[in-house]
Length: 392
Image (cartoon, rainbow, N blue to C red):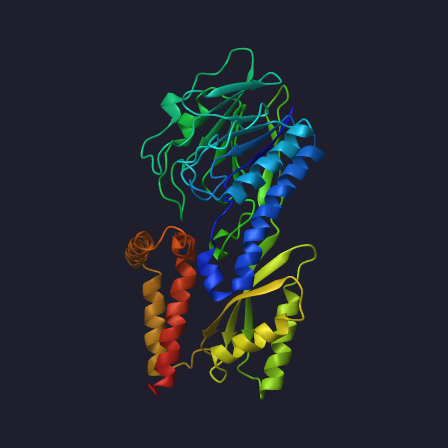
């Protein structure tokens, strides 16, 4: 028996922080999430799996618009008509969603929750509990049903487990306790980077976010196919995302004129094209001559003739340090400070304070995975200011 496992679809995510910089990229990201989910259903049908498993955060919030609801139901109905039932739970993002507000979901769409935590499909007992509050500080595991004797048992859980960088502690659960509960397979959600864990005959899979939404989620873009046989469950990751993120370093410090800048930009932007997949690119430009705004406008003009590549932003970095210069010595001291554990902990705390002060739909722009990039940008800005100010 085979299952297709996914989670963290985040349908309806507003992508506002990206859209403010590049509305075209924001629109493409919204569509990419829908396209990726449609591709998940296509894959479930093509592989003739026994069930499509969705481990929470299918929607980005508890109040999706009717168009987004209709999209989900249409896709799951398409799977059901092809003989693929769906088993799902609510996560922390869509905790308050009433899936049946517009009528019953259908006999082949099984939402698991506290009042109905188990469903049996083709001899497999699926168990799951849904979030019913936006934040749950304790483990769900003690409330999960015990394994059904004589059946293969599969658990669905939306949890931060023992904790992960960039993810708040939602329904935390010790991994050792999870693996010892007695289920054959755990299908997990919440952490957007995919991973798998084995403990004897037990397998746990975190499929990752199928369509990453920003540069802090570059390790997503996957779902997981799991085979339940007589022995240990087997798994296979499949790439699914329609839009990926990449950095592109470009040294313009030796360019003699704007025509050369244009040529170098065109070469760089064409190099990130990927057949069959869109790319969002951050240009990290080394130059003390060409203004970031000018480089941004030139890049946007070039991209009018390059399909499938979108510009997220252009960031400037200073030319290589000049040994012995006072400004460069100051920069080196700051770079050394960045590597200190105490500094990083303080920076992470300030980042979290800023995240909590932002609206929920853009707070992901300051997740923990962005810390190194933010610090590098800050050092670059300080270095540019010191050199521009004539400090030697």
